[in-house]
Amino acid sequence: MTLPDYRAQRARFLAAAERKGAEMTSYQHPLPGPQVESLYTDVARLGPATASRLMLVVSGTHGVEGYYGSDCQIAWLDSLDEKALPADTALLLIHLLNPWGAAHLRRVNEDNIDLNRNFIDFSQPVPANPDYAQWHGLYHGDRASADRQLAQALENAGWQSVKRVVEAGQYTFADGFFFGGHQPSWSYQTMKTIIEQHLSVAKTIISFDLHTGAGAWGHPMLLSIAEQRYAAHDWGKAIYGEWLTLLFTGAGRDSVTGVTATATGYLSQYLLTSLADTQILPLVVECGTYEGQDMHQRVREDHWLHLYGDPASAAGQALKQQLVEGFWPEDADWRALVAFRTQQIFLRGWRALADTP
Image 1 (spheres, rainbow, N blue to C red):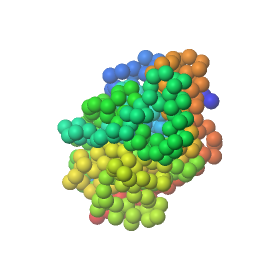
Image 2 (cartoon, rainbow, N blue to C red):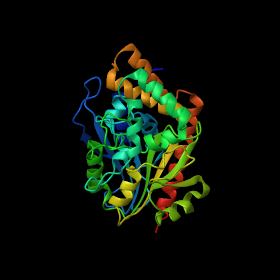
Image 3 (tube, rainbow, N blue to C red):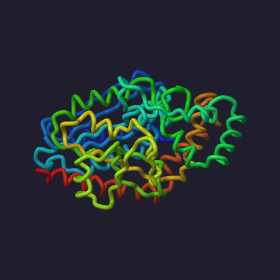
Image 4 (tube, rainbow, N blue to C red):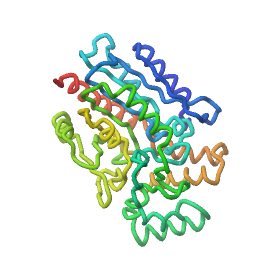
């Protein structure tokens, strides 16, 4: 496997945006990539800045998943006729919201933060997850001891019990698993700025946050993730019917999708909260890859690598290949299927947006 390259991917996206004459805004990350390259979250807009109807597509919330997302953004740009956009309608593409994670081939960001646990109101008490502490040792400290503890936890409690607690997110251990952060991350702050600069004018928004790694192999699930039902969910069901699954998150909740329902801090909910006066339908495309426990282990191996190993070593690169394969499988049919289905989802949403009064 040839590992994906941030600079090459960004160059492809910028070239696609230039071909369409998109208006560009770039936000430089304070840290470099593994080749000491500069890192950016890029925003491309097609259509008027005053448009009341907007389609938003976000890639790379989880960095390594951004290569699927970026490819979909490029394909969607290439499919559009920039000279014949629907009236009063615009497209906004946020390319690699977590550029550090994309460049370093990590799911998390530079502070070991899972961004989909970070979008909370830090002026309020952080979500409690007291049960995580008993299993923190599975992801930190002596590896042999950690592996024994993990095997014992799986035998005694079972995978689903471990998943519900560990993947719910925690805000105590900065070197732990599914860390939500102690404060808003760089990507959080950048997203806040993008909302103020690019999204606040629109009256109706349909958004897509692109992900891989959960669900059935090769199946791009269409989800709307929120803490409760919103009026826009009725609009979503009218557009997509049974293709759309509503996933409500919070303590004690569960889901058969493979996406963790006990978690808080999802970008989708942040968009709903930040744009409370806007009719916004936040959607997630989640493309299934390997079985959940397998994916958990791949991410755990990468976590250990960055705590105690050398990502640039031969062993480190082998683990990176395992991680990338988990989130961006080489299988040609997998890639073709998720690419095709994602464009279908975009097209149906785009047409519905254009028909919105």
